[in-house]
Structure formats: structure tokens, C-alpha cells
Length: 115
Image (cartoon, rainbow, N blue to C red):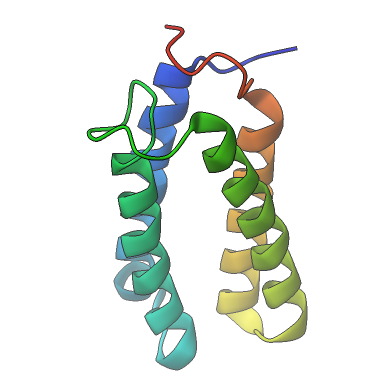
């Protein structure tokens, strides 16, 4: 069952970019946790901009590929949280991994141009 339209998914992608970009300052992330957060903001922005869906700007990446990348990213974030980070960073990356996976589960990657 699809809960999110591709348009809503695009909005959430841009919100995710903002969360990653602001997390180091708002949560006090430092070192590798902060660097990774800024890097993920940039990568997520790039992926969103080049995906062929209503949130994209230049349709270079098929929406299904976008979905595969999000699945891998969600699992990787959760794994990193549990193996590399502690404290606030662990909580942040675990929550972000769960959010990315929930958005992935709620989105149908079959019809990228649907409203």
C-alpha cells in the first residue's frame, strides 16, 4: 500500500537534506558525526535534484534507483548508529535510518510521475 505520493516523497527528501545540514549545529554533533551529516545532506540533495520525479530538477536517475539508494542508505545509517556512534550521534543516526526506511516503505517506486 502506497502512503506517500512521489510529490510528498520529494518534499520529505528536501526536509531530510535540511535535517542533515542542521543536525551538527542543533544537536552539537562534532568530528566524524558532523562531517558525515554534512556529507549526507549534500549527497541527499544531489540525489533528489537529479531524480526523475516531481521533486527532481534534472531527470537523470530513475525513481526506482533512487529507491534502492534510499533502502541501502537507511540500513547503513542504522548499522553505523549501532556500531560506530554513541550518545546523541547514535540516537540521531538511528532515528534518521528509521525515518529513511519508513519513507522507503511508504513510497511506491513504480510510478515516478504520479501526483
